[in-house]
Image (cartoon, rainbow, N blue to C red; front, side):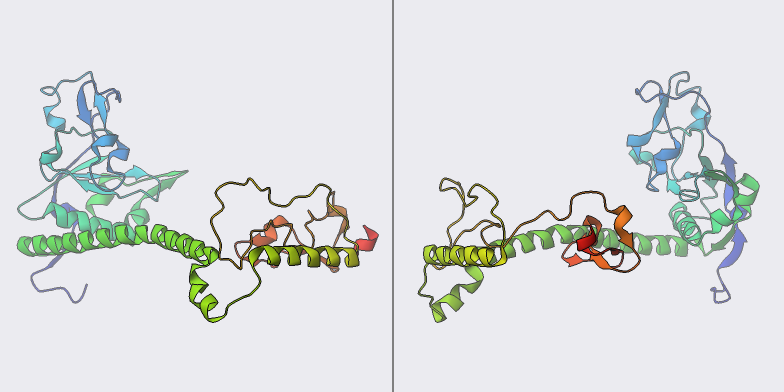
Length: 320
């Protein structure tokens, strides 16, 4: 604050707010019957969202003229959870007619002194650093700021032309930030698609096509599969692995398997493994000990890694 321009003034909201008022407390409907009124969720994204307004049927536009918002009015969330307390939105008449509803304060600024868009940015900064939360009264799941405390909020007031210049600069930067955010949001999708395409190319043999030309393999896919199955059966006999019953090799009529390089072969998971098991089945909690045999559970299997931070131990398998 000590480095403020000599033309800037340190003051409070009270110096720039001509009037603070509460909104219509009449019963609202969402059927589009009556005059459109703001609701607490209307400014959820700090813009006036006409998809989230209500309507008051018991009042016509003539009767409710004092509630009608005018260009540059600021809607302020003074009763809300701490997370949403202090949200603001500037109303623009070009967006359509809107009347001031309950649970939002209407701030009418001295527009010859304070630019509404500059005020909006200042409120965003104040909310970000927790200023509104600090001056609020707190209850269970809800906090509130009374009008007196709101008028006492410190405010930095440059000349009006400079306020508009600051707001325009921030608008431009915000626009760039929004565009960058949209591009960044697209990145995970693009990366995922690239990974999928890369994996598909790898398992079609595309990535090693040049290598196969330089390193020709005489064994074709059928011979490879036959040899691997023979080696598997020999290993299973030596280890005493019991058979799993019916043959689970790939049926000859499985559709849509993409073509492979001549030296490759399709095999099932079972055919290219020595054994497939489901692990221990049954209650284990009474076998847990502080030290012993590490016991792998489903929660230890994370994407691409075995996570042993929460590993548990059990007694020797011979005692189970």
